[in-house]
Length: 205
Image (cartoon, rainbow, N blue to C red; front, side):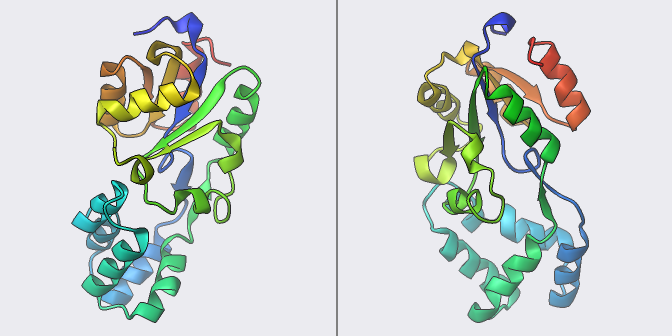
């Protein structure tokens, strides 16, 4: 673990940390209408081969959604409405946005996300928090994904800090462990009160 007194940058994961699903009902309604289990719907969107290839920039987000539509029997012109309903319960974690506003005075703020090539646009429109970050490392843009150690080092390099001067926050334990192995400090996000308490251990208010 790095020197807890010399943290200069705080790097956040995106999904399930800064944005969270407030209600499962819209996705469940989609699954029911399409005649598939919700688990399978989520797998096609987030954990299918095309999802991972798009996350690494090998496919565009449009190609991924075409594959999802084909697997579910959704016509091409129905995909926009499908996507709108799928994402409709996603909400920005306002308490963490307030935290970032406080931290920006004294720390560099980064985003490190396994995400598709549309995330920058999403952060300008649907979830407009992109302006809060000094740098965005998006897997589809850099061709690397967590838990590859290179992506953590890239994130610290682009913020101009040493790995030990950064703290990384993620909800996936394997990604947290990989960040620590790469020399960063890291917190496994489970909920807001726990995160705020853990950050106090690093003298981060």
